[in-house]
Image (cartoon, rainbow, N blue to C red; front, side):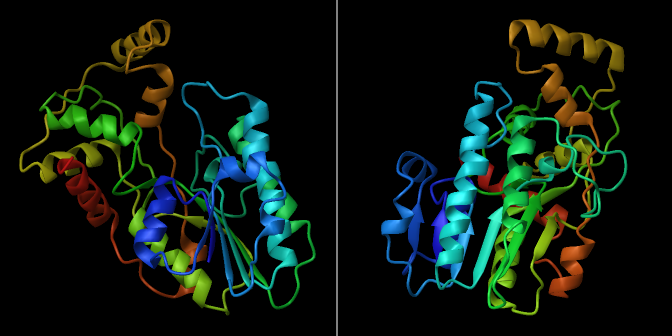
Length: 301
């Protein structure tokens, strides 16, 4: 298997799940700095390209637009062209639901017309469009997976901050906000990778990736508390006060700012019906089981 982005969170879980034997690892920086690197490699005997490398959405806005298009669009073109020129049979690219929309009011399906607003989302969509603009040989299969937020052992980001807040028994002040969001356990993602690699009957195409049941932020808070063996503490502070604090956070660069508040309290439900129908199997972990496993790994840190 040829894996790009093996040093990242998803890549490390891939190595743990599938093993290290006979893999070729390509980092984003090495390909980005030397476009001829892939051409110089002996790719014979590798049936799968797993393209995970890219530049994730930067909530601190430290990345320039050009960095997104170089890392997510141009890099994908290089890797996909190498796949087409090789004897490999399967190409899997990890895209994002953000290639479709940053906010949704209804359940997001694969039929939703893409309209990304960030450079991250736009760069991912351009990569997808490049892939499906090519004529695919009959013996090759191509899968673009659009996951929602992935969590699991080794995860970093807002979920870790949430875990730290609840772990010190700090009251959760956003109880007044009601939402539903889709998530994806990294264990379920590994299972789906394996299904796409080994099931030739699955047609090429774009597939949303999500656990079966969306959860609210309060559900997540409760699961963190449960992993700690205690009940959650939730306060229902009026939304106008919380919004005011978030605006102050924008100015003073506090942990709670408008963007983080939006992520914690907005709804974003992703349909996994298409992917469930093609694999015709149940996902290994329920939404609840996946989060409890993630939080148990956090508790050990």
